Length: 479
Image 1 (cartoon, rainbow, N blue to C red):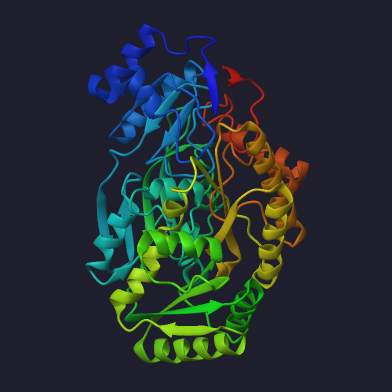
Image 2 (image 1 turned 180 degrees about the horizontal axis):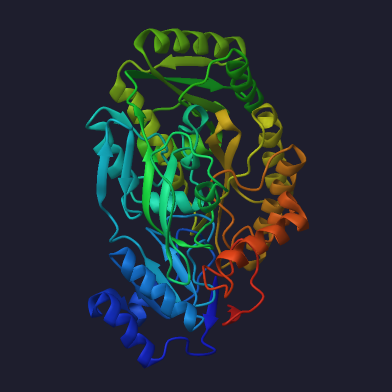
């Protein structure tokens, strides 16, 4: 695990008192235990201690904190629930972790304009419940949705199981209030369905991982709640037939709400965890849900079952009830938790390829795992080519971790070779910044750096993410 040795004091006693005067003593944390709790997120291997944690409640407080931090060159790391898997909220240069979880209000659900206006600290599942209570729907559903905040989803441009049909977080962000490092409060976008006035700052900030500004309010697009849904599961004696089924379903112009893939290793662990009585002699399975009007859902599920059988499915089963379908989907959502029980360290990645190359990337993952003698299970969003090869390992075993790193590097290279990308929904953060140039090129890196400099000339906003910072304020040592 990476840890850090203090090299200099970033926050003097005088500065500490100024920050406390902004938020109150209760919301300024700097005891050793409190700092340790914010030294890591859900990403394995990475850890680094902040100098302080500040928990503001208003946009004005955020503005005052940023202005003071910018004047004194103190790094700011915006953070929600810390569920990201790219080490995006690790304070690799120390400084201040800015916990945004007090911004947890749903300010408005506008049923005329089909929008919701919320604080970034609203938990994703709570937003789902609130809008569905009035017959509306916010589709993005990352696996961490019961814990993660919408602000964190926005920062990483999170996806989820419903991404195939409905898109990802960026497709639902209509407007933002944000604060620049200078303390200037800005707005972009809004409730307008059409708005092309100038550069699209909203889209730029979505997925920027806290490296440009701090978002304090979010306006989201909502859609009508689907009338009904049905779930189907298909089991296969090999991986290729499952991948071909995915291609054939899309080629037949059917776009399911969810189309998930699990390999045999994942099936075994999930079955042990959720007690589903899955046929564990099968090599893979597809879990497919369709939603919409009743007649459309029935027609699509019947056609999907027919295609699955044509493409070699050994068994196809349609869930008898909504509850049974929900149980299957809940088990899929628990895949990471289930796998995490096997070894001390679980590293989940998200190599992504075009749907038509799904079978090839699955075979590549198997080959690479065998080559480096590491234990990798694969599951993910088959419908949009976004797979999650997940390695169960032990970070204390440095030789094994080295092989794991080599394996994932080769998996990313394979994804790029197949026309894919290094990350489909997790983001770059600190975990993948050394791979970013393989996707966007050195010219792309330089352009991104110039954009960041325009927003953040002093490089205080989440430094050490996306691309390495030129100046480190800490001495990093590896245990």
